[in-house]
Amino acid sequence: MKNFIYLPGLILIIVTVSFVGMNLNAQEKKIVDARGKMKPWKEGAWITGKYRNVFLEAGYNQADIDAKLAKAYSDVFEGPRKVYFEVGDSMAYVSDVKNHDVRTEGLSYGMMVSVQLNKKDVFDRLWRWSKAYLQHQTGPREGYFAWSINPQTLKHNSEGSASDGELYFITDLLFASNRWGNNTGINYYAEARIILDAIWAKDGSKGITNIVNVEHKQITFTPDNFGYNWTDPSYHLPAFFEIWAEYAKDGREQFYRDCADTARNFLHRACHPVTGLNSDYTEFSGAPKSTQWMPAAFRYDSWRVPMNIAMDYSWFAKDKDWQQNYSKHIQNFLSGRGINTFEDQYNLDGSLPDFILQAGGYKKLRHSLGLIATAASASIMGTQENSWKFVDVLWNAKLEPYSDGYFDPYYDGILYLFSIMHLSGKYQIIKPIASN
Figure 1 (spheres, helix red, strand yellow):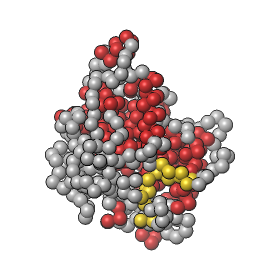
Figure 2 (cartoon, rainbow, N blue to C red; figure 1 turned 180 degrees about the vertical axis):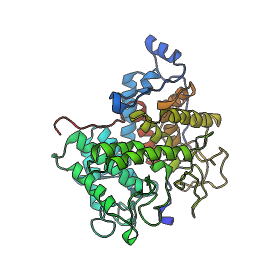
Figure 3 (tube, rainbow, N blue to C red; figure 1 turned 60 degrees about the vertical axis):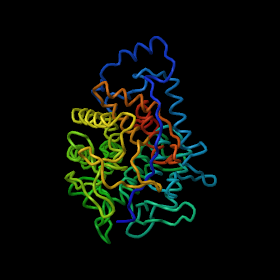
């Protein structure tokens, strides 16, 4: 289906790797020399209330970690090559600047970043714009969002939804409700329930469905007749369904917990047992799915899978044995291709694909920042020395154009920012404030 082709751009960076790229005091040097095997935590933050600062464990000092995160945020949201744009006094959007559109993916990612980093004005601006220009207010799709829009003309590029957009929007709003309450200008919980209730009102009439296939308890590629019976592994975020079970309070708590467990089991099937790679699109069985626009392979959507699994480990650690093995497999495979050179598209067995999916007018394999970042985030559940190398490589990476001019501050930039947040312990479950 042509309207749903996912064509984020890539970035090729030159990474200069030193063991630790800064001056160390004696204690920090001792930590670095003694790193040894990575030792993931045994319990998730839902139980412990604590989040790993992997950068700190790696020997970087806290002031530099804070500066690294601040710069990553500034590069994406504030700098000369930003992807965040304010509109008037009360709205803003995040744009896939290279593809000249705005997507529910980017808007909802921007909202997640801002609620995590306690930037209420940014969150509110993004939500108001999303609701005003993308959310369907009437008709069969009422409550859902058009997945892509031209920010200049405000014309929808597609009326259909991509299911991950709604998944993120709901989670963003539940976290906002927990962090800021519902009496500061936007009733975040009520907005989350509007989307949730809309999801459950869709029964296939006029071709519009739930974003979750209720028989398989798996997120769909699209909530309509086109994508209801297959999926995208990068949409499988068991941690988010756990959050819904705790905070949605719509009487479907057990269903959401079942969806979380099903997502974990699905990822077992979807990820190759040796390489850890998965196909961008699959059947609910996990079997790779080719589409009319490209053959099945590990491509841009799939970059998100290591980060999603790392998040689930960090927050809940309910599948830790498999997740630790997954981290080992995918990091060993990628480092086997060269820690500073691994490509960004593969067949699931690790061979290079004949079909290269283009992005931004370029059609070539690259060593892309987005995958560098998410592969590093898998170190949260790493069990071997190799995992430290990915952390160091991400630390030394930069969001900047490659020598041929290729640059993606949107997809690469946000995945980079997300991964810095994860590895610094700043991507957290936001529980309700006492006054709520």
